[in-house]
Image (cartoon, rainbow, N blue to C red; front, side):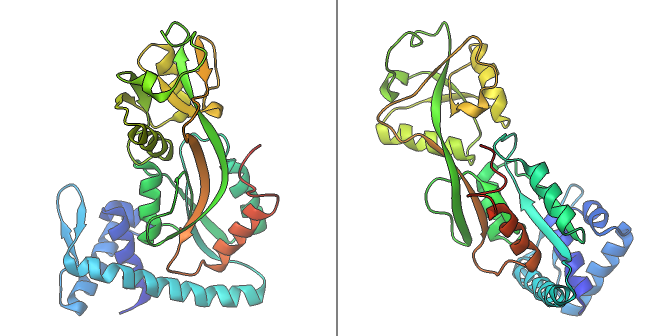
Amino acid sequence: MELRHFEYFVAVAEERNFTKAAARLHVVQSGVSAVIKALEHELGVKLLERTSKRVELTDAGQALLPRARAALEAAQAARDAVDEVRGGLRGTIRVGTLTSIPLIDMAGLLGEYHRLHPGVTLRLSVSPRGSQGLMDMLADGGLDLAFVSWPGRPPAGVRLQQVDDRPLDLVLPIEHRLAASGTVRLHDLQGEAFVDFPAGYGNRIVVDRAFAAAGVQRQVAVEVTDISSAADFVREGLGLAIVPQFAVHDKSGLIIKRVPGVDLVWPLGIAVPALRQPSAATRALLTLIDRNGPTKAVRP
């Protein structure tokens, strides 16, 4: 077996598609298929189940994947050691991030990193499952670093450093029955429709926990993945929202209230895999993030 076999196998396993894996590897699809077939022949077992829509790992493929990743990481660590002696960094960093979070100047951060280390390839990813999806990708070896919103302890296989937090406020349309109330508490919101993120996103986790702890049921009528769009749905009367104020760019037609006596805080953290050492390139990115305060990427 060669490292190339593992590289092609990991690409197909992560992309769940031969065409996407070939594009990622910058080779033709037939070349990927030939390498996978050769690896399966050498191991004497089928690693992938191919369907018309996607590729799934067999039990043998599931067992091989973490070991294939470990072999590639060991090879990369050897290259890193040589590159550090030569004074330059190489390799690839897979960075996970959240969608539409203006606190994170991702373009500025990665642009500065690229100017410092032009030999490192940067791959940026988001997950349709929000922070939960990013955490799973970290634990599974699919990411090297991720910006996440995760309250409390991280899941197994992930190490998390909280770097910022912002209060979550109630956003109401100006004509709502509670808009003129001096104080709004969670029990006042029983039966209201809400605009929120899908399950797995950080602010959704925080709000769900707060309502459950208070014994108050709520209905999420509209799910959005762009936090800045929540206020627009509220303004149109489709529900209330509980979001950080940075998500409300246009406050016209809206009332924003703090909900007292409840833990409604949106956290922002940087997460890395707990079971493997970061590469030299990843360590350089973490150093850049930490250079000027809690995180270089978080705007004031």
